[in-house]
Image 1 (cartoon, rainbow, N blue to C red):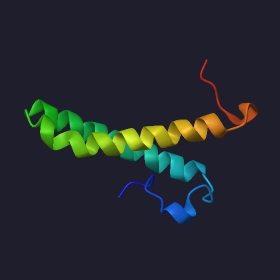
Image 2: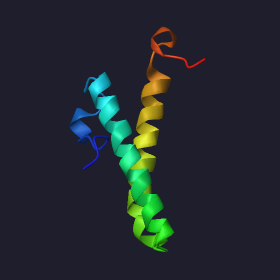
Image 3: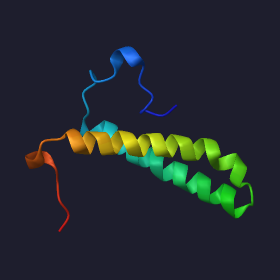
Length: 77
């Protein structure tokens, strides 16, 4: 189960740390690999569930990034 699936009563209360973010990024990597594999085998309909999880994870990461104070975000230049 994705780390982005947090019970309603705990939402907004969990502390986001580097380990959690790294696990989420690794999970996204695996999801993308799964999606690509299914699509290359012509099984696009089978990868829909993985696309939904990936989408949810990306929205979660974007929400965290938007909520972070400007001074704490790392930039890649």
